[in-house]
Figure 1 (spheres, rainbow, N blue to C red):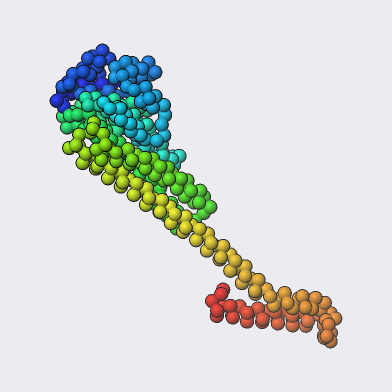
Figure 2: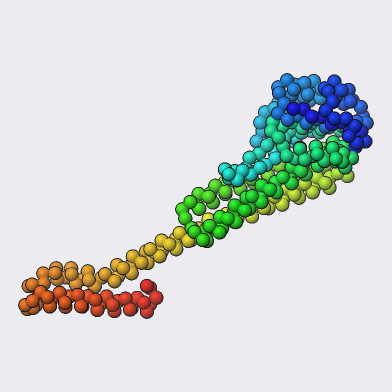
Length: 326
């Protein structure tokens, strides 16, 4: 699907015009064009990117191919930029990205993407409602697109933050083995988020620092604001990583405390059984003719053995209790 918008002095004058009209108005200096191609066919790509705008073959190749890394290239009369929208899938606990390719010229903006992008839809709605505020020039329209794209990071960050908070509660209330898997899974997704953000910061920084003449000087502060926004997102990702490390440390400490508790109980039981073990192993429990004794009756022998063992066990328990070991 290809949507087109034609602006004159910031006002929307026409929408969804034909390819022949686009080819004509492209050379009108008083007109700005925005063409958005969503899931275009190979024929539409060829007609739009080659036939009408005559973009560089390398830029077209990068646009059609899937790119995991954001980039920006200068082609003298326009710049080609690859940026990624992000969405957090709470059901599968993973970040998914949607590639947005942008050709930014002096009087045109061409966006190409295989899947629907929320920021594009939002910007189209804003253009229809108030075009002079949004689309006075391609560099301003690009800023508004990027601003909407970064704003859409916030719901993803809130969902991730909610999952981390829930994990913290689970660790304290009901520590179990599956928490470790959850922490490691979220940690890998936070790392993926940081890997998404870092190269995008580099791209936006090049725009914000005025490296490309397509972006006018008075708009550079707006692009620097985008860079600040990405920095805040990056800081949030770092905080999430630290929180998950703390959760993991708490979980491991609680597991170690449980192991220590079990070892302590087993040690106390083993210690309390020492008198019985010593007596029975020493005498062999041959009570009718016990060595070195002349006791005639086995009943009295058992009473003496059990009584003495119980007495020593009780004294040992009181000693452990007094030391605070039991």
